Image (cartoon, rainbow, N blue to C red; front, side):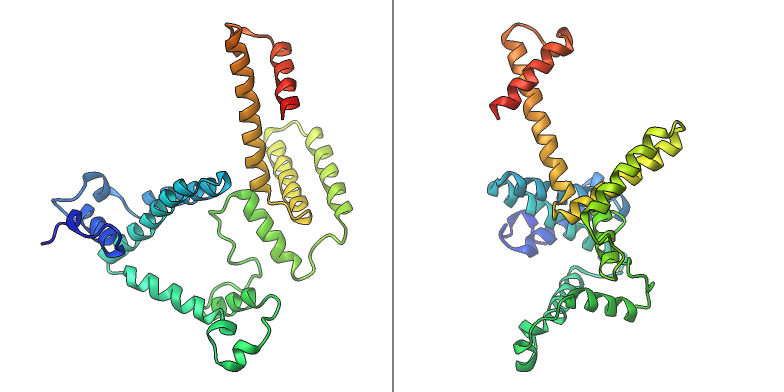
Length: 264
């Protein structure tokens, strides 16, 4: 049998051979042999975030690496499915190829289809028809994955509802709703009710982002990086003084925070 390490590393078949070797009973990697769909799923989500992070940072070299890690996740799940005879990697490729061709008749269809203007909402309508064919639930909110980041999922749920008219007619109503949720949160003292009201406030914030055409996940990531950058300035400046955050007062750190803010 050919050693996977001797194959062309630029070929997808080589990656598939490596994955099969890692999962080979008796000779494979003990850790990989213990994994299943559920245990690998968190890594799949993590790798997708790593891809998004590389894009956010504009690091193309890192993006290349992270896309490879994400591709490995697809190959990994396909290998698990192949072992239990559910489907194969080729089935995965075939499914997405057929879906993309089916959903782009204006590109891959006959001359009449290619000349027709793509109707607004065509993609969502096509997805809805496919779900109906598959005899799934008929809710217009179907198809928004539970595993999505909560804020992203909130925006997608709101956007789907908005398509059938369930939406605020003015952004002013969204601000009013946020103020209402803040007031309700301030009044609650029971932890479970505080959590519920806090969730309502976050949901309203996601709605505001949608109305402003701002991705809340992107906005929060940017805020995280800003906080990290400014706090590092505090640490660096205190270190120059032979001090540290633990040995400094809030007033000292707050002054350095304002300094970092001014520098930006």
